[in-house]
Amino acid sequence: MMRGRTIFAALIALAVVATACGGAGSGTSGGTARPDVTVGSTNFYEQLTLGELYAQILEANGYKVTRKFNLGNREIVQPALESGQIDVDAEYLATLLAFVDKDGKIAKPTTDPKETQAGLQKALDAKNLTVLDPAAATDQNGFVVTKATADSKSLKKLSDLAPVAKDMILGGPPECPQRPFCALGLKNTYGLTFKDFKPLDAGGPLTVAALDGKQIDVGLLFTSDPSIVAKNFVLLDDDKHLQLADNIAPVVRNAVLQKDDGTLKRLLNSISAKLSQSELNDMNKQVAVDKKDSKDVAAAWLKKQGLIK
Amino acid sequence: MTLLGDVARWFADPANWQGPHGIPVRVLEHIELSGLAVVVAVAIAMPVALYLGHVGRGGFIAINVANIGRALPSLALLAFGLIIAISVGLGLGFWPTMFALVPLAIPPIVTNTFVAVRQVDRDVVDAARGMGLAERQILARIEVPLGLPLMLDGIRTAAVNVVATATLGALVAGGALGRFIVDGFALREYDQLVGGALLVALLAIVTEITFGALARASAPRGMTVER
Image 1 (cartoon, each protein chain N blue to C red):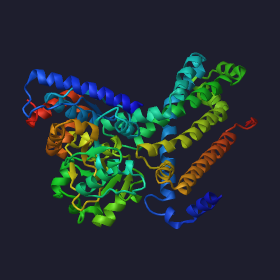
Image 2: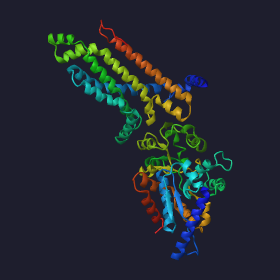
Image 3: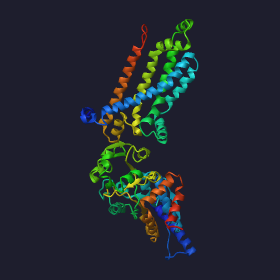
Image 4: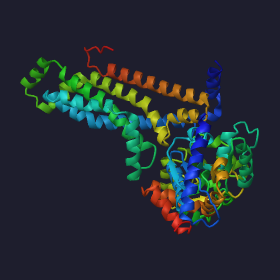
């Protein structure tokens, strides 16, 4: 019943938009219908910025966009997407795959973004959803050092730690020593054994303060943590691919894509193409640390990248 | 029931008794943290309460002000202490925890010290004054010795509270016995968690007994201390 009503509403919207477009007569590729799009997001700053990026690029290209941000966690947002209450949101490949395919029957997330995207698409097919191109930017476990440490020990990637780890203290959440994506993985994948481990928090203020105060040498933060930019930390590249590919990608309802002429897909993919880790982290820092409005930060970034005028 | 066996095995494992994260080190860290918190609280609370007790005024206000310390949630003080410690460069762990523990230790010391001085028989104090003792001498030679068991009782209450609460330090990357509880919870290693909790309880009991014995031993001859 809900679905019937939605389709009816969508049809009306379609008709309205089609008429509007016809009236303006500015469509380049003949008879382009621009479906109304509802952009959703979960409830933290990065998601608001990503939501704004998607919303603003669509608005700039003649789409009528409704924002439904801050809806809650994935447990709320994913069902909203599946039921059509929102049409598009920004997701994280590996985490979403593990969420929609809990037992890994369809596909398991891997450390490779392309592979994980393909697996995720298989799992999303049944839900009539499409995952578009993933960005280079991720939000996953990352290991960081201070600028001073990186310079003095010439560290760029995790494997650079091999000769020096035995004199260094690793800091992270208390469960880190036994987690495959934390200290255990560093040992098994990179052969790194640290002098000591200091139990702190899961990528929170304690880890930042401990790095800043030199109580630890290497800390676990999330790769898009704003303090990486704010504190000038160096995020070590996961060169042997320990972490699952939690690259950021738009997920869209097929119903919207079918009504569209391919512009929406192209626009959202153009964001992913430019969204590098440092670009994302810089935006996160502006919103979370400098307390700027995510709307303004997103607009400035889109302009800087030449994606909107 | 298997948990009890796991806890026993945890205590029996020699690996848990060695190194910088072993039980002896954590116990010492706990004593150091709790001990300093109580010493600081005594240094702050005792002089004020002794003076007010001696002059017999302001006790009601002092006790009520001190009792705010009881009402403030230690967890909030810990968070506040963490922010202050980071901003002034005192680091994580030890000092933020001190900030949470000292206000917790002050109220029983203030209350007991004030009452200890007030409850000294006024006839004795008047007699001392009649014999020509200075006010300072009355406090030092009459009121403090006679009130000492009750004062130590206040310190005992404070110390037991502090020993039990010092576990919070592990939440802000501190050491001490809270480490076993917080890490055991994070790792779902309930043997470690329960083992840590038992050690804290044991230390609290030892503290209780020690100060109880001190209070009894401090009683002047002819005076009995009731528990």
